[in-house]
Image 1 (cartoon, one colour):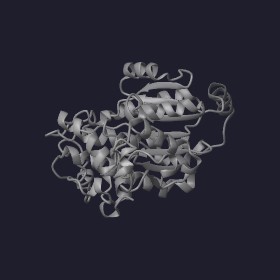
Image 2: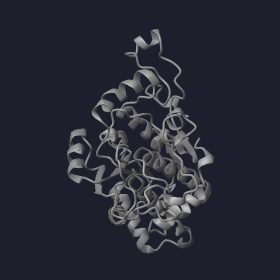
Image 3: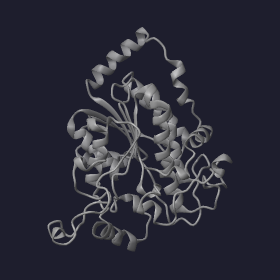
Length: 362
């Protein structure tokens, strides 16, 4: 899936662990026999959540996260915690989309700030009592390809890398213990075809994701060092590198922790959400023409609603309990041209694009 030529996964995780203030990955040495207080907490959690699974999703106020949360809630089988930066916006979206307030809980987190991630986890623990987290979906992200210079997080890291990768790395590490207690735990990292140089989207479009020898990360990847590879800042590459880091980390988590914990670690590419707010910082001409190109030329276009169903599938479908997988849909462009296109408004299928339903997953 992800090219091993680019990666030193163990080194990436080790260096990221030094960068991010956490000891979460050492949790297994702290296992203890449950106390009476813990048993009482379990009863409180059972009364609060019943038999519903607890899902934590970052970025539920727009785009893919919003549609995924809606799909989960419609089943009535999940309580969803939406980790968002703007609670007021989330409140409006939840009302517009009809999120059941009994099943949906918005919580504030600013992924641009490690302290906010720690605070979010503390608030989550207080809210859920002893209820384990059944699904952790790391979805939120920013894309700033046109920046001529790096923007820095509160902690001094390049903003895209911290929001997309480092803060999610921290979140995963702090919630592993909870996930390990669940009966069918899954940790899902939203990757991108742009971070995979084995694909046309990742290997054929400059700049290509490439961490090289991680020289920038070895030096701390803090202002003025913006890129993990140690080279000059490139906004589009910073985004692609962050997605590559997520996919590499998913594979490494599988190798190191799946057998010990039972957690299914996976990453996904739900298709190109060409009309997503992710592209809000692109130029107007691009935002107008890019969806047309992806829909009718490459076949990679997928709507937010369908992409949300795909991420929902990985969280919900029993077939997706497999660990160490990079999930995607509809292989290469393959059908829908010619007469068949007339039945689908000219849109071709394949390349991760729309159509195919759940059975097109691989």
